[in-house]
Image 1 (cartoon, rainbow, N blue to C red):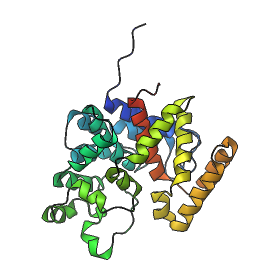
Image 2: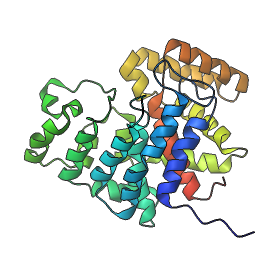
Image 3: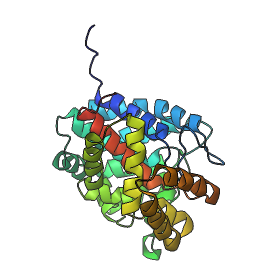
Length: 281
């Protein structure tokens, strides 16, 4: 039997998007056994397919912001809306680092720090393709509200803010902390997945609960407030390691509309890193 051709970084990124939504149970997330009121499993499958052009652009050396904007535009070509915006925000610089042969915390940081003002403008433009849940900015930063989309471009240019600068100004966001912190949780979770065994979707689900039990989720905090975010983390920690308890928590979170989406973003990015490092599929 001929050995299979190695997947490219862009292909592994799309596979990570698919494996992420296939993992179950992931309390509060859409997975292959659970839909939400306005998001279904097939929306995530379509989003993964649609993101391909942007991920291939990242792999081929296109500017990070332009590749991200294109990936989000493609992801949004389904009826569910925002399925994987945060995943793509983490995947695009990681795909670039992998394509350059430097998929490591230092390599990913180098990609992030090299972003430009034009990348920041394209990042803001990406918010025009789908609705993204974000916290309101401070009163003195209203001109930099990401929901302004391309209208924020003059401010970004006049202040000479790169995409990395924008992430530094978003310290309360879990994905922004990955960008400015060497993608620490991403690489740690990837190592955990590589050290785990069994089907990859099961590893994804276990990694999700592990991460949620360790840190409050940004999206839960944005949608429900800090007390609910803290309680969700506590409940995940209590269920961790008990498959029946995790499955029960998954049903409860769906009923309560608690969706730890930022945690899923990091798990998706970690799945990509693990695939690039040889996790078998």
